[in-house]
Amino acid sequence: MLNPKILLKHFGIFWAIFIALQLLFSTAGVKGGLARINAAMLSNVMQRFLPEINLKAQAQQEDGQILFQFYNQEQADQLVKKVKKTGKAGKISVQNYDYLVDPSNHINMALAFLIAVFLATPLAWKKRFILAGTGIFLFYIYSFFRMTFRLKYEVSQLNIGLYESDPNSFLSLHKINNFLGSLGLIFMVIILIWALLVFSKKNMAQMKLKLS
Image (tube, rainbow, N blue to C red):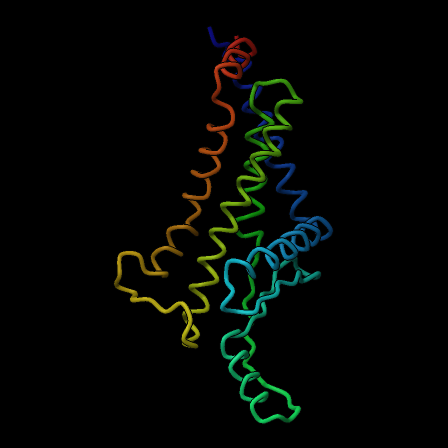
């Protein structure tokens, strides 16, 4: 039979870790470090998923935000071809765009929640850390998928001929972006990741034993 005191103990562990991580992630040094890591990964991943734009992500040291800078790659290629046809050396000029993202709005809080959920799970501590690491990896895959549509939507609003879609369509970028970016869905994804990794026959038996 489950012991209520042990359940409350693990519930307390969750809140203690979650609050501690929230405070840690809000410090300038950690916030800036996370922004640099996220910017480096996003620059590599987004360039592969959004080849139509030349994109770079850069962490803003002072506030931990991420600045996306991009331009229309197809337009740049066409201008290069025109210059080459003239047979003369020349420079091309393309419009650059900026888009600023603050990871602390959702991502850092969600990351703290994810880590707290796994570390509060009544399993051996080694197992908790392994599952937390795997969970972070899976969550970042979802975050990259989410950011792809977020950037597509933002680019579509610039009216430069890229990623345009009918806003009234059932699968419009506007609706997909709002759905993927909702805070409720983010936490549902975390719970789903937790359930997929934790709910095995062996883990369930161990949790039942620890909670008895």
